[in-house]
Structures are given as structure tokens and as C-alpha cells.
Length: 104
Image (tube, rainbow, N blue to C red):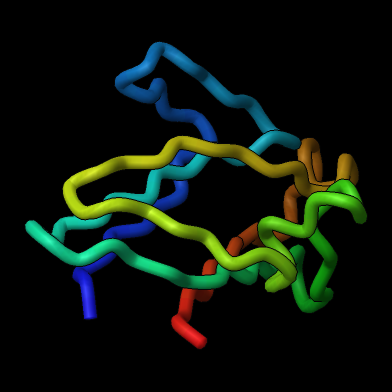
């Protein structure tokens, strides 16, 4: 199985010059394998305080809610972003985002 690195960077500037501010959450996925492509699914979960919220997604493009199989060639990097509920932006409760990626 290819080695994947997936990290969330909501306020970081990506190498491509993109910068995200909440409620947009930027991320980077890297396939560190030299030969094998990666096929995987991504599920993003958003928590604010003790509540679990859903990421804001287009129902026709369920990339971050388990609905689409991703394909990433060996040695490639993918930059993307998704939204979280507006109520998370100025809230003082703890906000955390859990990303699960897995192969079928």
C-alpha cells in the first residue's frame, strides 16, 4: 500500500500560493510511494466543543464525506479545501477536525 501524508492547514499558505481562512479549511495530500498510485476515500469530521458538525459540502461532489474514491499517482501532491459551518469561525469553544482516509 502506498504511503500517504494528509494534513490540514487552515491558516497556512500553500506552496501554490493559496491561503485559506476559516470557514474554509485547506489541506494537502501527498503520495510518497515511488511506484504505486493510491486509491482512497476521505471522510472529514468537524467538532465544536462537544458537538459533531458536518463539513459544508456540495451534495453532487461528496469528496470529503466518503462519497468519492480519490486517485493520486505516485510522487504527486494534491491541494484542496472544504468548508466548515460558519458558527465555528468566531466561537471560543475548542474546534477540531478529524480526517480519515482509507482504501476500500
